[in-house]
Image 1 (tube, rainbow, N blue to C red):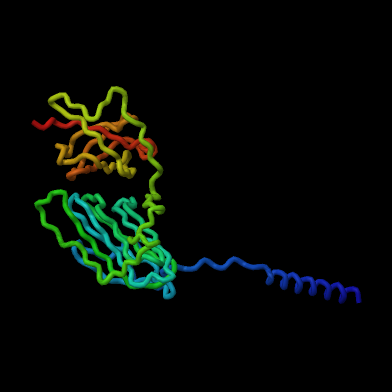
Image 2 (image 1 turned 45 degrees about the horizontal axis):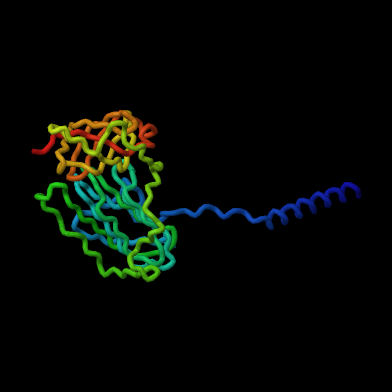
Length: 292
């Protein structure tokens, strides 16, 4: 009798424990994204987007297609415009991102339910690959993507600006447009940059009759695998007499840089300074021959 009672008590306790465990809410399993994508859900599978042309595609979260990548090949320095028009933004949640070949984000916009036209204008780009990522976490839509490119050399012809197919641009709070001024574009891959100010004895610019000191700003930088960093500089360029091979200084850091490519009002350069060293600095100076 004692053995049977003990056995029944143990079985009862096991049953109660199982029932209690069933009442405890378990965290839902993580939802799988892109389980039925069209084959362009990763960057290395990006589909080509040519400047001056439009392409139509679609995203469908309920049916497992969450991410599309587009590839734009740039053959020379210039300015790039990217336009994405969504047909249906109801219950939509996601983002559109434009990145260069190093993965540096040139622009990012959150997709919301009230705007269907998203434009990235005058992005300074150099020879290489530019990627456009369109992602929806919730919702479904067809969309049209277009790109326009203007080279730094105005004598080279380019394709026409993209024409978005029948966009419906709805105003926000009666102001129109699709950008909330309270939601600025932020590059999440870089840290905040502060300007340490001019070095002692520096004027803006210095003109000694033979040379002029130009001031520019580091817009972004990427650490290179073999050491040092690549800089994207705005504020001076070929219009000011800057040419590849010229050397300048990073104000406050004391490190030098060498210009590798030039556009009309911008340049790329390399420096031996690491990304960590560059973090607090963004002003650069460069001497060029004075114009007669």
